[in-house]
Amino acid sequence: MCLAVPLRIKSLNGTDAIVERDGVSRSVKVNFIRDPRVGDYVMVHAGFAIEKMKPEQAEEDLEAFRELEEVLKTI
Amino acid sequence: MGLDKSKTYHLMEVCGTHTMAIARSGIKNLLPSYIRLISGPGCPVCVTPPEVIDAALELTEKPGMILATYGDMIRVPGSVKGDNLAKRSAMGADVRIVYSAMDAVEIAKQHPDREVVFLGVGFETSAPGTATSIEAAMEQNITNYSVFSMLKMLEPSIRALAADPDFNVQGFICPGHVAVILGEEGLRFFSEDLHIPAVIAGFDTDDIVNAVRMLMLQIAKGEARLENEYADVVRPEGNPMARQIMDRYLEPRKDIWRGLGSIDLSGYGIRPEYAAFDAEKKFGITFREPTVRSGCRCGDVVKGKLDPVECPLFGTVCLPEDPEGPCMVSAEGACAAAYKYRSF
Image 1 (tube, each protein chain N blue to C red):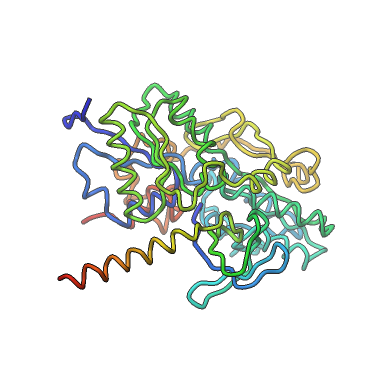
Image 2: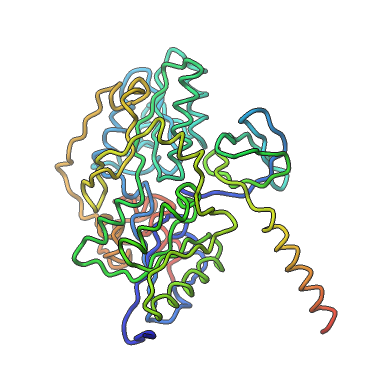
């Protein structure tokens, strides 16, 4: 029930946004999000963005890939 | 301190999405025998009592009524086995499954000559969206939209559980998306008042395993702190904008929980100023305690007292396709999860 999925804001019109992931998009409300921007990742629950994802998360993922590359070079 | 591995440590999650994530991942079978993961009252459909479901079923009988609901509610039986919204729909009632409360407002807009009632089920994660739908209807002067609020609050249910003399939980895996709204601040009562280790957790297998590690470390050290394992999404202050709109339209009230009974200030009702959007007031909804009692023990399951497989009805007369109670109906119910991912 309290399921939420991270989706990327594709376009904005006031408190309405089109969000997408892997080519699937839908309209959600972003009225609880402070300063939403196109390109932001938001957690979406039942048609409402409930929180912005921290950009560091994406950076952490990229860092993990960099570490993987480093390790692969040595083995 | 350390752990006494001859004892059993019970860690409780209170979120249907955690129930499913744990069942799917098979974590339970991989943990040592002295750590037991149990489900608490975290599935909103499961804690909704039969008299409330009966009232929703009765609403569908009103002429011109359109009942809009999340799909989770469609097969939940009221006090009579087999009587649910899906059956009512098959018999001609107009029941629509919506993804968002805003979709229900849209239906009301398209059918100005009909009444649309949205079944507002959920915890704090869902409450702000439900409140927004009232605001949207008001702003657009949509007078044929109302909400039947079944919204529930996390904290009072946990306090009620903890007050039970049989309460036997040593740590809580806290619901990540309720915490998005309430923040770490809103969950401090776990550690500060109840003195139980608590970890706000995300929904991937590694999140849950991390939460178990953090809880066991706290238990071993004799600590009771609130930790945030889901800090990428959950802020210390939560989401104040979401709470603001929730507070504008909704107010805490006494509510009835399956298994836990009536608890003061444990659910959200619609503020009297917005009574025009309150289906309970608009349609004079009353609740009658069911006279027929089935052997369903969902009430004990939601309290974490009974493991689904210990219920005599589980997998015999109570099956996902022919459920006795909501824990077997809801995809997130502890019984449905236990049945779907059971081992042979």
